[in-house]
Image 1 (tube, helix red, strand yellow):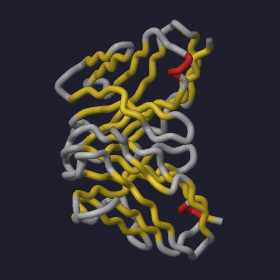
Image 2 (image 1 turned 90 degrees about the horizontal axis):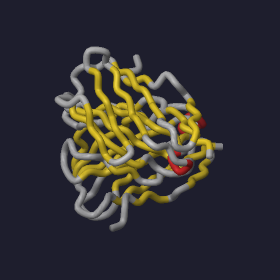
Image 3 (image 1 turned 90 degrees about the vertical axis):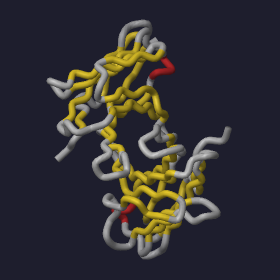
Length: 113
Length: 114
């Protein structure tokens, strides 16, 4: 039973570049959540998706950030024109159904130089 | 305005003794609380949860207590083991936004001393 998979585990970008973070949920899970953890902080909710649909993006910054969960393939969190303040750990979680326990991936650590 | 607060950033406990981690919350509309454990460079691992209609839930060495009048919950680990050394996050889950998104505290770093 593979858990939630995220890649890359580490990503280095220069200011102004694009960052693409991928998340493959656990088998049988169709609900995906993205969270961000800044240094010395707890995880903060960003977006909740089901297959092909964004359900709740209330935690997403209004500009430069987007997310998708296509019918085939992993969920993608995309950050355009990265800035140093985007440096953080980005975690994906999946659950089998709405309101059920969320299981987290190992995270992608983004460093913006 | 932080909805979930973990006021102790760190806690040290002797192996074999009880570890008590605390969490306070402000949102009375939550559906349930969860505790996650996190090792460095890994994602959070689910430990135990408690629904709003209960005041206690137990799973092996882990017990969570919920005091709704005080808006307080705690995680008890008995007996504590060195492998329990990690950062512990409490989180609440609220369905009001339709997503059951989790709101996390800042975490408490537990060190179990052999």
